[in-house]
Structures are given as C-alpha cells and as structure tokens.
Length: 388
Length: 228
Ligand SMILES: Nc1ncnc2c1ncn2[C@@H]1O[C@H](COP(=O)(O)OP(=O)(O)OP(=O)(O)O)[C@@H](O)[C@H]1O
Ligand SMILES: [Mg+2]
Image: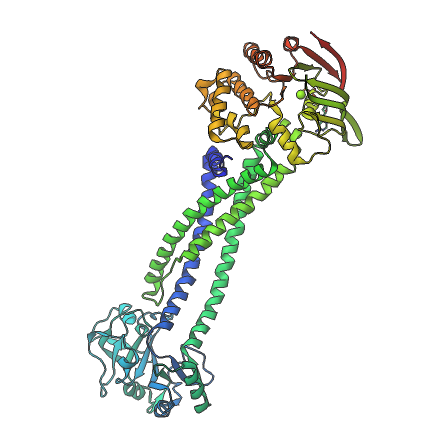
C-alpha cells in the first residue's frame, strides 16, 4: 500500500501556504502548552529535590499557624527553652529554635514574595543540621555577635550587597552583612541567618522563638518522631517536611489543573483549526476521492488517507511546537530571573511534556480528520463523480 | 464466448419533490468478451447513469447487474469495491488523474490497491505506458501533460489490473477532434489487438461508428441497437 504519510505529505505541499499557516497555528498551540507545563514541571521537580535534600525534617510550630512559611515576627510565641525538652524526645538529633524576621530586600528569594526571611538562630548546630552548606565569603555567626547577618546563596545573588553592607528589616532595624553561603540549590539558600539573641533583642522578645527546626536521628522514622513530639507537646503543631511538601504540591495541583485546562483549550482550538483546513482541502477534492473509490479503493482506505493527512499536518506542527515550547520555557526562565531574581525553581521540559505535546498534536490531527472523512463517506459516489 | 457483464431489467429512479424520474427505465443488456459497444443518446437520456450501474458505481433501484457471472445485488460494499478494483476499468471524460502522483504512479495506483508487489506493478505500469506511447512521460505529473496525454494515462490506469471490461464515459468529450481521433485509435487497437472488452459512451457519431455494436438510448430505455 502506498504509504499514507507520503500521500498525506504530498497533498499538504499542494497548498503550501495554507498548510504552513495551519502548522504555525499548531506550533503556537502546542508551544504554549509545553511552555506552561514546563513551569509546573519545574516547580514539582524542585520541590522533590528539596525534599530529598539535607536539612531539617520536622517543625514544631505554634497551633493555628499555617504551614510554611510561618507567621510574621512579633508572633514569636514559643519559649526558646522548649528546645531542651524537644531534644529530650527519643529520635531527635538536632533542634534549632528560630526567631523569624523579614527584610524587604533581596527580592524574596525563592518564594516570589517581596521579602527575605531572616532566621534568628543559635550559631552552633547550623552546619550539623545542614551538612552540605558551606561558607563562600566572610565568616559565620558567633555566639556574642550583635546585629549581623549571613546571607543564603540565593538571597546573596538577588542582592547587590557585599560584606559590610547593611540589610534592613521591614521594621527598620539594620543588620550588617558578614558572610554569605555558597548557593547549592537547597532550601537553606533561600534564607538569611542572624544570631537569635540579637533578633530577640531587636523585637523585645527575649527568650522567645517563632518555631523549632528539628532533624531526626539517622535510621529513625520521621513519622514516629513526629508522633512522639505531638504527644509531648499537644499545645503545639508538629509538621513534617513531607507534610509541607504535600501541601505545596497540593497548591501546585491547582496550577497543574489550570495548565491542564490550557492544554485542553489548545487541543480544542487546534482541532477546530486543523478541521477547518482539512474540510476545505477535502471539499476541493471530492471528485478525486470519488475517483479513488471508483478505481477500487475501499472506504477504509480513503478514511485512512484523510486522517493520515490531517495527522501529518498537525504532527509536524506538534514537533515544531515542542521545539518552540522548549525555547519558550527557556525564555520564561529568563523572564522569571529578570523580574523575580534567583528563585528556587527553573522551568523544566521533561520527556513527558514532549510526549504530551506530540500526543496532543496527534489527537488534534485524528479528530480534525474525522469530520472531513465523514463528509466524504456520506456522499453518493455517482454524485461525487459529477461534482464540479 | 464468456459473458463479462449482464444487466437484467435495471432501473434507476430518482424522487425529487414527490416527482419520480427514471434515469434508467428497465434496460436488458449482455456484454460478451471482446465486445466493443458504443452507447449514444441525447443529453439526459441516462447514458452516464447506465454506465454507473454497469460499473457498480451506483446501485439500481430495481433489476440485477451480474459481473463475470456474479450477481452484485446482494453484495456488500467491500465486495463491490473489489469488483471495481479487479473486474472493471474506468475512463472518465474529466480524466480524473491524481494530480500529486506522476503518470507512472497513477498507473500503479490500482495495482497498489490490489496489493501487487512493487517490482511487478512497476514493470506492468512501464509496459502499459509503452503500449500507449507514454513511456517518455512516465515521471511527469498530470499538470505537466496535455489533455490527450492525460487521457492516455487514464486509459493505462484503467488497464492496470487487467479488468474484464473498460467503461468509458465520453472519454473524448473534452478533447479536440484530432486528439479525440488519436484516443479512439487507442481504444480500437486495444479491442482489436488485445481483445479488450469496451463500453464507450459518446455523443460523436463517428466514434459510435467505430464500435461493433451501437446502442442508442432515449429516456432511459433502449431505443435501438445496431451491429456492424
Ligand atoms: N442524483 C440525481 N438526482 C436526480 N436526478 C438525477 C441524478 N443523476 C441523474 N439524474 C437525472 O437522470 C437523467 C439521466 O442523467 P444522465 O447523467 O445519466 O444523462 P446522460 O445521458 O449521461 O446525459 P449527458 O449526455 O448530458 O451526460 C437526467 O434527467 C438527470 O437529470
Ligand atoms: Mg453523461
């Protein structure tokens, strides 16, 4: 049998500009779909990476605050001393009380907020909690430091400030920048770190903390430690990193839904677009299809011919659309970088997205071919032969 | 002599706005192997309709059409497709070549549909083009050929699967008289040298005269038949 693809392709080259315009339409539809999907795919991937990364795996937070990120400063309602009680719970390896403050500078590394989170922490267990963290410049905090700050890698990249410059908090206080961490694409890149005592003093919250970060001991199930912590501190809320990731993913699920909707929309527009071209193209060739059947082609052959032509048309669009989508996703990255600075994610065109793009294109072609094929099939052969 | 085609009291009626029109109103006809039959008659007399019925392009509203002894009345669509593919060749007034295929590919197409292997159909298409004097145009597309050349390709295509009968509806209707004469020569040669069975619809009395049997129809009925 003559390859349908060859025939389909030759037919398309018959009306070159019409085919090109149709392909262009599909390129745009598939391209934007791929571009959009690459955003949520990138975010999902970064979340997974962060979840696997080193760092705290449990949080003890006041009741009635939402999951990360926690409340603003001034809501530091917990007692720092509780850290010792937490440390006494079996399976807890490291506890870090955090007094959280915010700075309007730094462009909200990683979160798209206009703020940088400044964690007031004790200086001693930081690197034990985050074994991959390393200092890139300056020095680390000291126990008796005043209002100083060490910037996380991403925060530092978002800020035009060097050592010795001041970081201003939203409440007006200034911290001197004494160091910066290396950017390792880990959660700790997205915060700045100040001595907890200095932060407490600034806000008059001596002996208080906003929440506790906990790292469970090696080989212990985080879930079990969480259960023990919940039993030990019923007045507080215990969240695991996993909970937080699930929460974040659920929120992203909405974004995914929107993206899926956009894809469906692209699909519908694509079908209408290609169907329009195919109907025109088939209507011009009523007598040709009749001739094919008169010389012995089966109806199935003609249907396959029309649908393969339609699929060829939109699959070409799909291929170039994927390419365009890939370029678009790189451009989106640049745009995000330009407007929001360093963030915790970058767009990611996974093989799955490429496959989705191609599959959508093929579905578009198949559906768009159905109606013109039906149009030809329901015609009377003798009448079609007379057709002008 | 074998009977190639047989029509038994075939009728085709159209009902338009409550009015019934008989395009073909009961025609009996037997076509024997090697026949060269011309069908003539005024415009609207039912020539094309008759040919379509004989060629299983259309189904009669009454009566039976037998192809190579097989009654087509109860056949399903795919059996009818196969009859058209293997038993009948068609030549059209408007030629109807596939414009995106070369002359050679157009001639090969019916063989492809019949599942003939590439080498064999290539060879046969070459022979047919040669028979019709079109070898040098094998790789041209229809748009690059004159009407007369196109029609010769059309005839070659109709012969591709070696059908029992060729049905041609005014094959010279769109050609000037000189080219028409050339095409008629092709038909005559095919009939004389290869014993090809032919049924030809025509308006041209000269064309009609070259056939061994001439049938004249009027208002969907056989008016008279002459043998020469
Ligand atoms: N689909 C149809 N619906 C209604 N009437 C039809 C249809 N097809 C053909 N007819 C009628 O049937 C009659 C015979 O038509 P047909 O085309 O067979 O004539 P013809 O002899 O081939 O004419 P011509 O020499 O002009 O080609 C005409 O009156 C025509 O109007
Ligand atoms: Mg006619």
